[in-house]
Amino acid sequence: MFVFGLGWSDHTEPGSRFIFSGLTLEVNADMMSDMKTFTVRDLDRRPNQVLEACDSFGEARIRCRDGRSYVIKTEEKEGLSISALPDFAARRRELFGISASRSFAKKFDQALASE
Image (cartoon, rainbow, N blue to C red; front, side):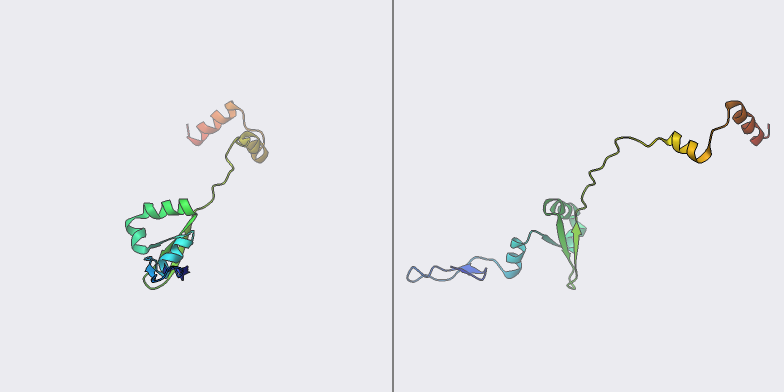
């Protein structure tokens, strides 16, 4: 028979006694949860382990000494990738109209340069 997550005893055998399994309430709750819990110190000294736990479990909890806790979650990747670029030439024509001729552009550049 399992007793409150702390140990077990078999009442069917005479002389059986309670055997301590080494689990505390905090450890048992952590084992039953899908979320790994770290301290702020862990986050500072071993950030890679915290991020790996986020990758494995989807999120990780960070606990402060004063009792506050934070949850770090892995962001889902967007499945969209750029397969084709927009038609920038069409956008430019739509915004600015027909572009100037090369000879006009050359004269305009010379005028700007005061040549």
